[in-house]
Every structure is written in structure tokens, then in C-alpha cells.
Length: 60
Picture 1 (cartoon, one colour):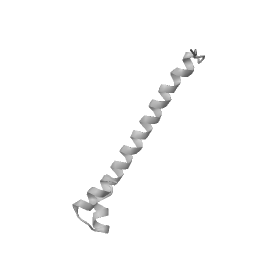
Picture 2: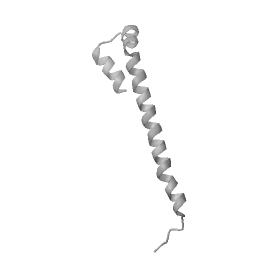
Picture 3: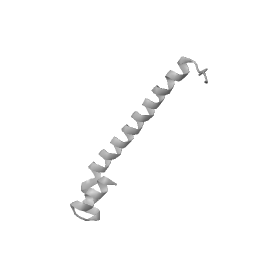
Picture 4: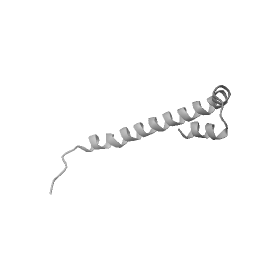
């Protein structure tokens, strides 16, 4: 049987770091989705394609 020798303060910092990384990732994904949604009319106008093509852009 092994006994953990980590101090409580060191192990308590890991969930906060994980939460910060997860929040940053969610922010970047949300920002990317907003940018693509704003650019959809220009993408449609300049590149053509129909609704299906725009759906693929959003999905990608």
C-alpha cells in the first residue's frame, strides 16, 4: 500500500488549473464559432455554394 506524500495545497491547485484550461478552451471554441457565423454571408457571396456548403463550413 502506498501513501501519498503530496501536500494538500499542491493537490488543490490542480483542479483550478484544469478548470482554467477548460474555460480557455471553451472560450476559444465559442470565439471561433462566432467568427465563422459572422463570416458566413461573405463566404457564401465570394465562394458560392448553397445552404449545404455553408452547413459544412459550420460543422468543420
